Image (cartoon, rainbow, N blue to C red):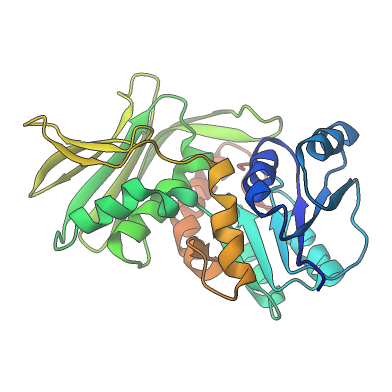
Length: 308
């Protein structure tokens, strides 16, 4: 029986971590890695121990799953290309899935024979599963992610998705936007922002703050107290009493999570990440808040925001 085929587009930093994550399935799948860089292909080839190949451009052939770990710009065109080229059952998109709401609409219209998923992996972390249990019955809370240089524009959607997850779903809305300035991103051609953005979901609030003087950390405040969330260590502490409320150990890396998404997809089951429809709701507040900011600064956003 032929092995299921997985195509991985993009072998840069995040793509390579997906490659490492797929190693747990190396005996079960045939992998095709796609990247225009011969150096990245060679590095991936040396890492992968299973059946597969690594090419600058993929040939037309059926695939069970396609993972798009490329930048957000041009993502819709690439999605349509891989749908036509591989007719996959599932497509897993790396965040930022799309940087324009029209592209989400175009993607949903194009995915007629395939299911779309977006990789916001905090849903998979034992820490956040435990935190969701701890927040059961708490109708109103405020979660704040703050610090300098953590990537509000490129990583903010992770925390909006987390608010959805902790709330049991729903449609977040923009409550307040106070962007101070647009700054160059680490990736050439892309940008970041400094300032704050607040989103709401029912009685819950998410406050995202990126400023040079912002105290780093993730906190949750509710009638049950103020909790400090150490994501790396997998620990939640009551700020007032110092009591450890949750301790599940180190949070997993992406290289430890990809197989847990791909395996259920191959088995015809729902994966532990957001569907494209859910992710659209998570991306909307970020895109809607930042679009007028970039327009006012003279950026052409007709093809989407320059964030990834």
